[in-house]
Length: 219
Image (cartoon, rainbow, N blue to C red):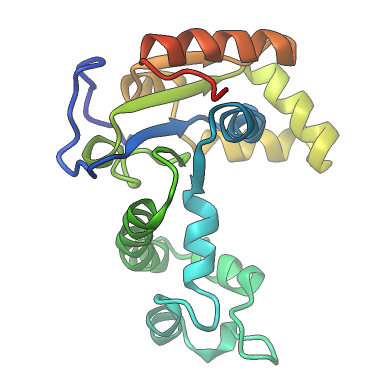
């Protein structure tokens, strides 16, 4: 089981503090509604949003910094006719071989963190929200002043995934088994946002957390 270092509250200072930036880490399991919360943070608080999974995928595009290393590891058989990495082929290859998966992660996790830090430094916004379902691998304690865990009960998450993505219950449960437990997510976070009610209720709960952290909606 993967665990994160416990946080020490609102006065915690990350080891990699970027002047003029407040970085909030956001985490939670599949189907928790993180995309909805990110939209609120972008639209109401003016946050610059970075999603670790999107950043990682950009790094293995043809001009991405991890493209050559991944091909060197997995071979040219994962390329499509245009020379781009076929993510389906890549996934089917690495998820049946734990050794290959670990090797790819050793390439992508550091490269993703470096790209995130670079984008934070370049961002015009002062509030940054860095989202990852893998807070330890995303190195939240090094970078984030606050960490928010978006929580939704399992049955609601399954209902959302079935409705929005057409997943079977079995597929939902398989994905969830491979993610962190609720206890592990909580241990990584210093606030929990309950996203199990109406959108308005979630927005109000988020507002209370943000005010506690000294962060207000933009006027």
